[in-house]
Image (cartoon, rainbow, N blue to C red):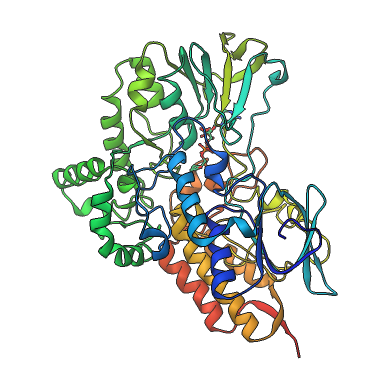
Length: 541
Ligand code: NA7
């Protein structure tokens, strides 16, 4: 019984989103290991369980945003090119039916402590309600958005209306009819939310600190027939996505921006723009994220295209200013469908809180520095997360000497390959710190890192390894590699959650592997091929 106290198993996975589900299947069904999942929520799906705000959908087109396992895609089709959280939840139900994940998942099981026992070589993991599991291997499959973040505005507790965070949305929904709504934040979430709520509420006011340089999604319905006709090509499609920079079905051009004439460039940008989605970001000239002049060309085209959609001149200058707020593409662009038109409606508004910050929340609304009080019935926080590192820092994770990971990471993040931690033997994590995480398509990244973890555990078992601990000097090398790669790009110049800059006091550093899939795969595979290079090993006699 997965809910039993004193579970004694081979592998415990924390989290039942894409990462946890994938690893449970591979470790249990292929390696035959006694594997279980602890999940804080009441269902599978990870982010797609928590995020059920209106308009929540994925920014990756199908069939890229799914597993490559034929058993899963052969009988599955989608309804929209960019599925909503509702369809994604259906997909998780489908996964459950085919792979039987739930039977080995304990729901409502939030992990509050995980400590290594140096006598028995087991992890001892405790849940909030007091159950304990002991396991030979611990896998943190928490995703990068497990710890939500709120502004610390004065007076929030005085607000008489409702306050919601996008990632803690009532499962029964919220009635926005005739309501005056404030949406705080313009990340991927804020854009999706305000685009949708802006069509339902009496008025929607977006509080924007940084404009989101959104791209057109080009959403469309997809038929079962067109998908089934394409399934012959799926094996190659899924193989190909692993060879691209970010695990998408496209990659950066071989060309640099100024290899083309201005006319050729305009044509190329227009083609990417018309294709929609992230192509304008991830299939563009290869120097766009490295060279200021090249980047400026991408910015100019974006600004021209976007400004012509907004009629109100004041809103136009806030949402799509003439001067770039940051290098284009160094902060995550959201995909929108009619965000700019919805914001342009007379009943909706946008407040520039970079120049006119919030000073206080009153019982009936929000006051900005210019003294104006705007009244609201509902405030929606789309203020994001203590991204990438927040999850693992919030589960009571301690190293073999009893030091909390918060202390290990107090002066900056250290990991080995974005999958292991020195001092935390027999533990792996994925889709988190210093992996390809934020610069990747989730399912692709999960398969890339998940495959490595499966192979590592299998190798360790074959070699009777009972203790596998990353070395500090190799963590340091990994951190340096990330820094060197990142320093060549334009990312360091922008305040983004990629750089930890969204959380006050957080160290400013690149939190993701910015080198792309092929280099990540090469580096990590070498570690296995060279006999767990960079790990301290103990084996059973
Ligand atoms: P993000 O991308 O972190 O966006 C959060 C937004 O909230 C962003 O616009 C922030 O402004 C704004 N924010 C955060 N804190 C504050 C405070 N204190 N005051 C005003 N505004 C604030 O989170 P999302 O949920 O949208 O998306 C997370 C990822 O999930 C997304 O990238 C996808 O990969 C899926 P800022 O830009 O920092 O000026």
